[in-house]
Amino acid sequence: LNPTPDSPTRPFASRMGAESSKVPLASSFARLETEDISATDKTFWNTILSASPDLYASVGAERIRLALKDKPRNVAILARKAVQNLVKAHQKEGPLPSNEQVAVLASAALLSRLLPVLYEKEAEHKFVETVFWEGKMPAGAAGEADSEIKPAAQGEGAGAGAGEEEMLEGKELAGPLVEAGLGLLFKEGLTVTAAEMSAGWGGGIARAAATPAQRQYDGQRAAILRLLLTAGSETLFVTPDDYKRSPNRWLAAFTARGPEQADAVLHSLAAVVFSYDPVGMGIPYSSSVVGDSREAVVDLAVQLLIVLLDYQLPSHHGGRSGGGAGGVEAAVATERVLDTVAVAAKAADTGNCFRDALRRLAAEDAFEAVFQGLCRLLNNPCEANNTLLPSSMKQISCFQELLILLWKLIDENKEFLGYILRVGDVNELVVPMLYFMYEGRKDPSKIGLIHICTFILLLLSGERNFCVNLNAAYSKKLPVELPPFTGNHADLLYIVVHKLITDGPGKLDTLYDIFLTTMSNVSPYIKTFCMPAALRATNLFEAFATRKRLLNNPHYPRYMVFLLEVFNNVIQYQYEGNPHFIYQILRRKKVFAELKEMAEAPHPEDAHAPAEADKHKGAASEEGAGA
Image (cartoon, rainbow, N blue to C red; front, side, top):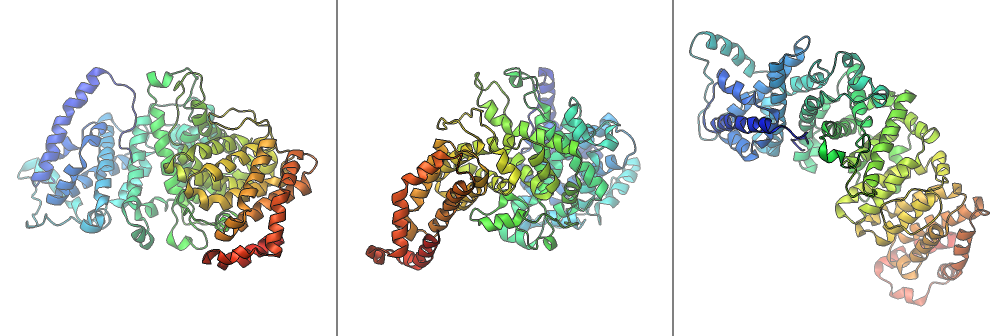
């Protein structure tokens, strides 16, 4: 989690003021580590909770760890004071005055810095469990007696302190924090205008895409979104075994909202994401001169959307293999992926209010805004790397999150899938996905990116309209070293898949099954393949059909069957328009003859094949004979 968004360049005086305000904040945290601070010491708590939100990111994690180890009660009081500020602001009627806005943003920034450190060793100290979920105060540090928090000694301070002290015991913080955090996304004067109180951010998904962006609340929105995302990130700090045993209670609280609130949050986050235009007027190098406050909000909003949509209650896992394609195992089988997306009729209640809200989305103007936004944002990286002036166009960094969000959209909302296949130019999504796959093969850290693109293409390839749309002529120029060809988008698909199989990292071999399934799915609908695409498809067949590979690798017979299906589909359905493909098939006459010979009379040298090859020889021979 990035605690500090990119912000516009500030005047020198403002930076000087920020530097000077670090001093009281640092001294306050120093006292937090070493002294027992009374809950009624208003001066101390007001100082530590009134700094500039940007400064809390400078508080070192080690300093928080020391305070948690030596003075856990101080940390608990600090967390409770911060949550109280958020709850009071949420419950207050009307706009917040400026001093209360500062307190809210400071409290949100402080909790965003505090929670990740608390999550780190939660299994040992149980601080979050005790303070946030049970509403209790932690015991004192090891080796010291539990000290009582003493009220102020006199007068007005004592009376006010006693009232606050009563709030320190017996009330959990997690529920109020979730409620206040979601509520503050729609607080007039803090994160929305009066008009947006009812319509959502930007007036809704469709309207936000059609009107100029209002950015006066970007900083406040980013602070609240960062807090919500941080609170829901506890899963990152647990082991896989612990994750399977116990669900994320923060996300369970987030996803238990009412339909009206869920719709408002989903539509607002979608509006800010899909209305974002990183290029603007297209002036070269403008992003290097003018800061973009909206980018941080978009990054946080798309991440929060994924987290909220991905969560499933344990009782709803049932037959689904988890909603998130980004977390699908590398060795997933094609059937398993297809099982995930094949069910057209979804359950009415998923147990997640945001997934239910996504399924309720049905307005075509909203679909249009979402689709246009996806096309604009996903095409941005390849356009930014394909300019005449180097680095002259702003490039977004959240394209992988956008792809996961696209998977969620087409998996959960079949009406949206039908819309983009019926009305939209789906090739505007195909080209950037193929670009990400082609470029991602060079970087081991991009394996997950290739996985999500592969799963999306597999899902789409099962739709007739998608396959027909691939016949559209391909005219773009990608900033990659593709072989020169004149053809359609299916040609581009075949060329990229061939490159991934022949020149990709070894970890991609678990995806070969899906690559070839996608090629097979689209093949009956492609009127004409160009020569480079046909050559690469038949080269793959020749590579998989060698005797040694068929006997030593149990997966190769299956790969060969997929390619035979491609050949049969081309010959049966698109014979007249594919002379290049027919020619390349005829050139492989010797390969077919060798396969026939293997099926009818296995070669004597097969007896010396490895034991694993003997184990699978019967299956390979049967598949070869059937083909």
